[in-house]
Amino acid sequence: MEWQQIVGFHQLAKLGSFTKAAEATFRTQSALSQQIKALEGELACPLLERIGKKKMRLTAAGERLQKFCEAVLQQHADLQEELNEIKGMRKGHLRLAAPFTTLYHLFRELLPAYIRQFPHVQLSILDRSQESVMELVRVGDIDFGLALESAVSKDLATRRWRRVEKMLLTPPGHPLLGEKKVTLKEIARYPLILPPQSLKYTGRRTLEDHFRKLGLDYHVIMESSNVELSSLYVEMGLGISFATVADLPLPDARKLAFIPLDHYFPADYLAVVLRRDKALAPHKQAFIDLLFGEALG
Image (cartoon, rainbow, N blue to C red; front, side, top):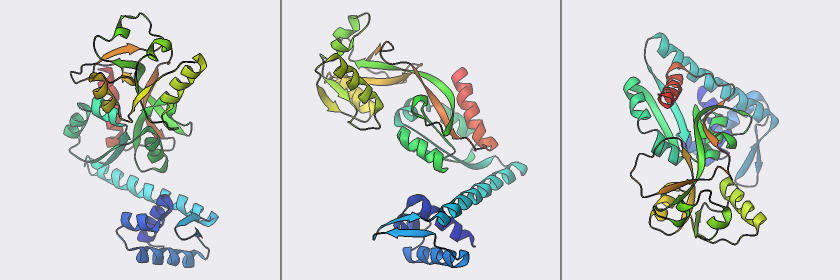
């Protein structure tokens, strides 16, 4: 079994496509197909079951081989990092992902500080949805990510970072700012800017469930999957919206007002998300240490 066969099969099993796996390994589809056939000949068993022209799935033997490939590739990466540490080289690769708002508002000072401390570490930072963050952690494509603790599945480990609260976003001077405790009946009177209707936007589902239980009519004037875009149109006076806000001031001077909704939505936490079997190299753990040191400082 050759190294390129291990890499090629791993990418094929992960991506589920010869085209995508060939692109990821800088091979032609024909070359990748020959690698897989050679593996099947060496192991004397089929590794893939083709379903139609484009779909495929792993056989039981293929699933076992994929676990082996994951372990080998991870051990290789860990070994390289350990050797760098032995040689006193503060270098390696750090891969992380977080939703756009977290990266935009909360990492601005943290990332330059880390780069100054570890100038030879290769960073890969991905702007991804919470669901993508969890899947990337699960398959080992990133070292860790950040997501709302309540959204993280139990097969993954979490470490709480910052407390966050659900807030109503309005322009300054909005009539609702004069209320001691804003009710859903009052909120439903105004045009709403909400995320698209999708299973991944649990906040919208929760809000609409509340509206339905109370028999409230409401109007969604705009759908936006990006809180920054929603905020822009709130500032313009198009409607009011919702955001999950961390316990710190926003860095930009925005023409926005925030109304707490803790009487409807319990507080949550932004959390670091990791695989339970993941041991972090020192330069990766240093990022988390900096993350929590910055939060406490």
